[in-house]
Image 1 (tube, one colour):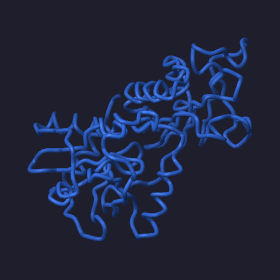
Image 2: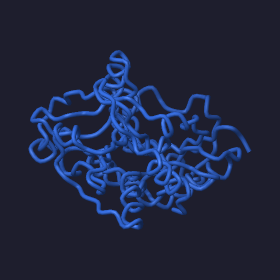
Image 3: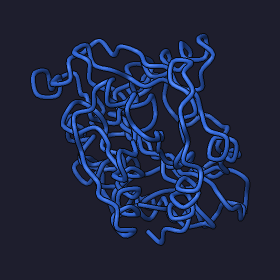
Image 4: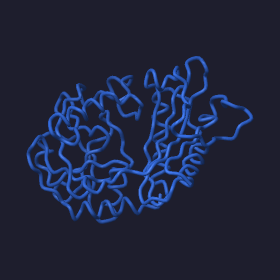
Length: 296
């Protein structure tokens, strides 16, 4: 057992040749040693996709939805289709090798590999999660930032890859730094035509008159696995759920707000652009208890 675990996949996709025809499907490697070639397109161009999967008591959560989104993202980038069986085995293996902790995560990465090699690079990395208690119980502050695209960009300009979970996260990280400069914990993107989109690494969920509402997923945002499970919680609790176009006025009128994601789970929003917002902490606790007790 160890604190962090890395598995390198030999053949991340059945559509491409293995790196070593005589090797197993994956092998464990020392996480801090060199493994990726400097000419790998995932490194020099961000040409790849990833997923971050919550692990609770050694069990990867929402594994099949994560694998399905991994494949959708790969297809959007015209990458070789991930071999779901190989990735599932690698994910379960790194979880089994990790030191027992309450909460951890696995990050899966698939890149196009070295240019001209026709062999993608893939790995699954597991490590303990940081303490998310303050975000879940005290809330987070957010600022709204213009994303620079209309809300219909996914339809008008599919080559911009909005809605794919790619390695090209420089803009998201720049937005996070801008939020920090403005004294906030995170940012919430807004389209140029005034529709609320998503956070830098999370989906927005709003409580509106007893319903839970999230922005539609056909407007260039990532369909969230955690958000889907929040809606599953709500529906089991008899609450109505909806995917809608959300304006800044809708955001202002909502009864409560959350950013939801793997690792952090449901974080209530305590302020937007410096204005204090009401938090529903009892509902937040129920949502997080549900998310952390998922069987799959």
